[in-house]
Image (tube, rainbow, N blue to C red; front, side, top):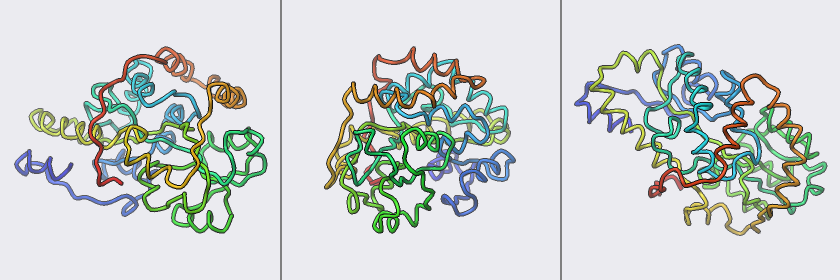
Length: 306
């Protein structure tokens, strides 16, 4: 994407690219971009929640029916107010993409449960050791479901799974991580219902972007939007992606009745967030956008991502 921007601007823009973790972790990268030490960054939504807790709304389990539901939600004034607040703190999303509701691809990243035990029965979770991202939302999930939340570095996760140190994983990026962790080598089941439909912030330092000439903005905005549209796609609408996730695994899908039981069990988590300042409007927007037409037809996914 950045190389394309350099070429399209005739070299008026030049970028120095550093890959994830080379300079900063997700949290420090956000801070560095805020300070204009770097001009662009990407981070998972729960990392952005360190700057504005409302981003953790996207971590609430089984809140969205599917990616299109989340896409419709992101077009609402309630969510755009969250983006406006972040922009005032020095971080602005790429223009024209999912965040501003002007070209959503239909979905972002699905977070699934991978387990060595049937995951659909709530009683099966009691006492199990499960790797999660140690965010307040996922720690609360562990408390309510009765499993032991384990913090395991991604590099150490294959060994932890192989040795039984963890008996389940709340997976991160469904396709990308599956490509090298291959959960199916260690586990038997995958819960096909997305526990969380997460996504990534991708954007600029606000001050740096705003000082760009308008003709440069007109060039780079559609390039950035096109990149996001092609990167973010519905894993389960991609035969290649879903084949990776389900290879050698029993796919377990919660029925509407079973999903209702999970939501009832997790109600204390939802209640905690409803009581927080600024969250009532987000819950209302999520409910108002339940059901409806797809945000936008999905584009052909980038095969190299597999």
